[in-house]
Amino acid sequence: MGIYADKACKYFLEGYNCAQSVFLAFSDVVGLDKDTCLKLSSSFGGGMGRLREVCGAVSSLFAIAGMLKGYTSPVDFEGKSEHYKLIQELAEDFKAEFGTIICRELLGLPPGADSPVPEKRTDSYYIKRPCENFIKKAAEIAESKLLNQRTENLVVQVNGNKN
Image (cartoon, rainbow, N blue to C red; front, side, top):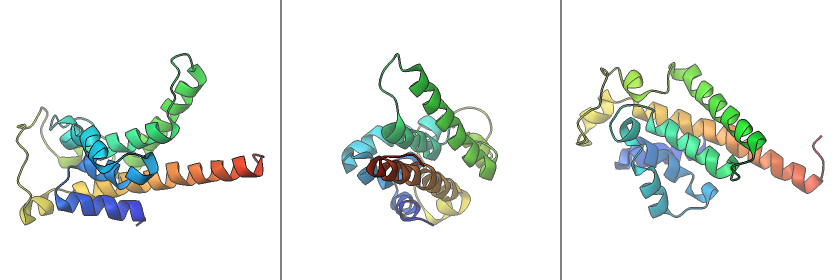
């Protein structure tokens, strides 16, 4: 397990939601302070505020990708296309391990939203919720697919060639 996956799992066990855990682990990389990371990602826990839609860990994976490789111009069709391709690849990497990126499917829950009231974090909570596995995988994907490519791109820029 990489250092970012370790940090993300640690944050989850401290009580942060799945999205906060992943995004906060990469705060140094995305260049945001702890409070900003936590606030920005707070809505995505529980598959978007316990709606049980896209897994919060995956949402933060996508947010990290946006911070590191996102586009900014509304007319950058090529940049937008490349970014969406990257997001789809990241989703496929996660799906290869778990079969889906949908929170309720990952947790075996019925359709529909959960109560907005989160469960208390107890030992039994952590036993019945495999979220730590999803957090670990999302962080590992971010580290391997986004940080390693980022380092390779920096080496290319320093060396002045792409080969």
